[in-house]
Length: 252
Image (cartoon, rainbow, N blue to C red; front, side, top):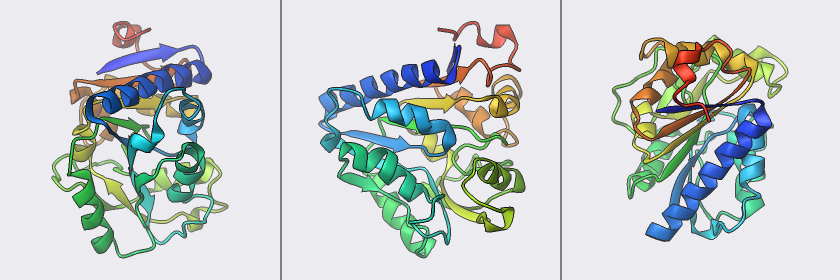
């Protein structure tokens, strides 16, 4: 794992998007298709905005998989990750091969269907963030590091639900769903490359816990340190609690 620190969230997003775009182009050149995993949430806004403007990407040759989705939340709800991905990625660039998680359907039907698709070939690059509680996708602490399933149903802890409220997706905590479908930790780690985008001061405690503390299910994103081709993109604020010796090697 490599940590890259930038002065602000815009320069962070620009560098991460440049790496992501290069990885997509390389995968298409080598395999005829780039299989990607896309993250959602407020932390990904600028990254996706810049990525979707990248030149020379044949988005028709991109196959996209979805990290997580709330259960029992309509697809037209402002907080729906299906809505988010359609508006900020799929429809903007014309991706025609995508696998969205339908949180309105029985997860026992949704999970086998998308699992069958994701396991047909390797994922070339995964775009992820980390939560204020250190979660990776919707794997809240203590995360399941052992499941070999591609997707599981998870219970969302209060810290996770309060983050969604704080980001403005819901009007009241009671509106935030308590369950979701999430890609598992092990499935995320199967990606050949991981680009982790983590701006903002509100993520600083989670960043310090995940990247300077123990690798533990109590800090779910800490597991990224075991992936040989992960780059974690931080800005000055999100990296504020890391000691200089932790980030010196990865600073760019």
